[in-house]
Image (cartoon, rainbow, N blue to C red; front, top):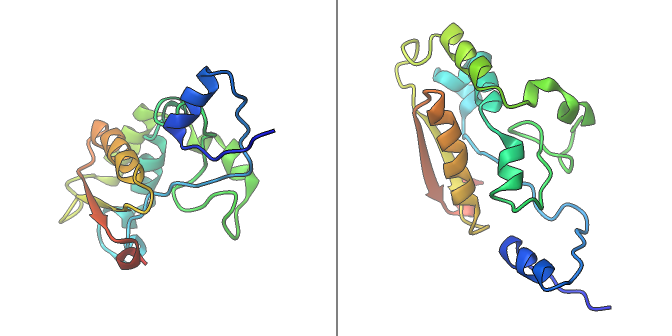
Amino acid sequence: MDIVAVNMDEALQVQDEGYELRILGRPTTPIVCMLGSWATEGPLSDIRVRQALTLAINRQEIANTFFNGLATPGGILWTAPSSWGYDPAWTTSSYFDYDRDAAKALLAEAGYPDAFANPEITIYSHATNSWLPDLHLIVSGYWEAIGVETKVVTIDGGELR
């Protein structure tokens, strides 16, 4: 038996050539990082905006397309099964289902964008994984589709920490 590590794009090619794919553990958990969101007067200080953001992301579509069907949709914006304090009940909650209409309703209830001096939400993306900035652009697209102003800023991983 031969074992070789391949990336997401190579995995499909290897599979098409007749090799068996086996995913060992959870190799990576992509995150969306919005620094200082808990300490601002911006839109992320309002739980309804944060709820709208999570409802606006079609995790299954991302798993099927961007990750070539090789990913399992995750839960909330800040944690994953490998995170301290993670609760498995979060991934079975309908709160994380894709629901664009509910997301728009929550934004309206929060008064977004008019209730905030600066309604723009910045996603800080580090290029440790070369694909992560692309994933963040996809998330940004979901948010812009519900009317959220976004900006993706690529920074060095050390600067992010």
